[in-house]
Image (cartoon, rainbow, N blue to C red; front, side, top):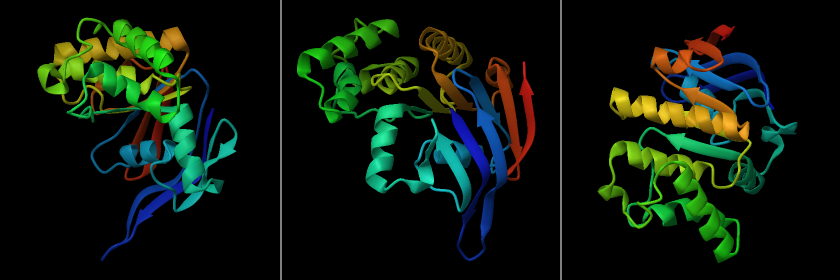
Length: 224
């Protein structure tokens, strides 16, 4: 599903910084994987490269056999739209759109017909327990509810890959546990490949596979 071969990422400035150094990794279809490491270890950089939000300085990344480095910017945008769902720590919901509209937006971008969009958005918001919050704006929701909307939006296009960057990091422990449980349930239900960046050992331990980075190097890869 996700093949990473000798991937390095360097950032140039007054001093060159190596965020990742020759990382090689294979993530199988349907796995739920955590990426851990201290700040600056390269875990978020790796997630961004997997998601096609950035390009490696060297090495190769394949998603479903497709080499990301060989894609144009337009083709990479289409791949992200069709194959990858993103969940971020700070939700990234559009403040002027209600729950239904936020979840519907990716489907509008794909050109789905309005009745199908409404059906899918309603289905997902019900799945994450927000069927009574359809017309609420993000500012009218709790942090946990906002993250549920973000999860519903990420799943709107049936993505085979779900990438989550600290999805519980901006939530209290109880709400974070609820969100993690929801992600695990959706992973089981849809057999989605899930990669979670986290500082939380409890979140990492709940995944079937735990990968640790330090100073841009892969230092641990453990399957439960």
